[in-house]
Image (cartoon, rainbow, N blue to C red; front, side):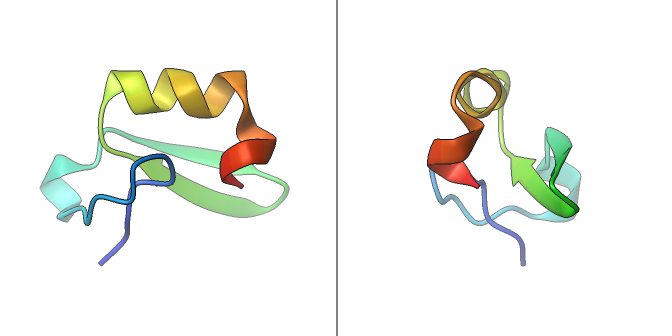
Length: 46
């Protein structure tokens, strides 16, 4: 199962908030807060 790129929470497919593409990789986040954190500092999480 995929994990949230920000907080590390294991995600069931129905709980994935967003897929983020960066440098040819797909990252998943679990909530809007994690999505904002990823977008603010992607190099920290990628």
